[in-house]
Length: 448
Image (cartoon, rainbow, N blue to C red; front, top):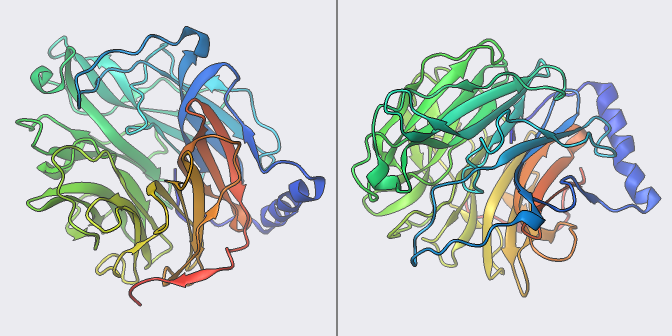
């Protein structure tokens, strides 16, 4: 899921350029399915390592033939229970071939899997593959069912994964009345990424201080400074009551900054916010409410806030219902997040747009991928900027099979490529790419 800029060896950049040219010359499709036929796969995440290898994880709900009957819920009600598996596949030749899907979790059904609380994957400078996911668990303190924040890693290119670590604080509270279905605590809606120096940052929401459904959660963070072998004790970095408790957190890195994207509960809206740390994640002393219309909503938006950076420039994108039209909006900062340009709609002509993802492919060069509806099902679109966000290209549809294409995940690769994984037709995982050349048609963004 990492969208930060990587430096790749010159030989790898040359190889990537050759690979990028081959599919068009051979007349092959620019996308392919990763998940196995007949299985219910969803919610992919993607990361590219320093060697250019592409790593993808996704949730697996079992065989389509074993699909359970839908449960009945009252209007507005949903289940907080999920038992899924997490699968991994890797390509070391630019996406030409992929390893057989491998289950990451050791216990079947261990992963608490929802599209709005996805597992995360990142690859560090050493090549270690880091995976972070919400796990079904039982609290030693209360004996009750909980969802834990769990981490595992692979040091052999994804052939095996380590014994998972539970890194949240002990679940010594009972919020069964808040969650229902016998679930007493959740440390979920989290995120993970690896800093330029190899430090592993994880963050999640802690609902221990919530009084009711209208209240906000806290954000907690645990950091590893030894490539994931161990983690420091978790710390609260955003106090309880402020974090929208069902909007997944995100992470990015600036020149000397750790950027934590979240949706904050303000008196006049649940709005996208960046919390910024300039001391390696110890304190997030600067916060900026992004310049998007205040979204007053009686309920949980289930919408994350995406961020990326190429140094002093910070980019952000999110869905907001506080603008006219509602949809995906994009903004940027030239001073490390101190100030932001007015937000612009990414796809103003769409009937619906959502789920933005950002990838930085060079200094001042950013790509945005999102899902939108025009006259038919949801499809994927992309746009780009080569001038630090001042102008955006017109939306272009990403090649994908017929039917619904949704929930994209992106990662920048060598040579300016952007790899995209997504959920196709509701229960298949596909991967494709955006070419290095920037979209040609530009439109002016608000702000300078």
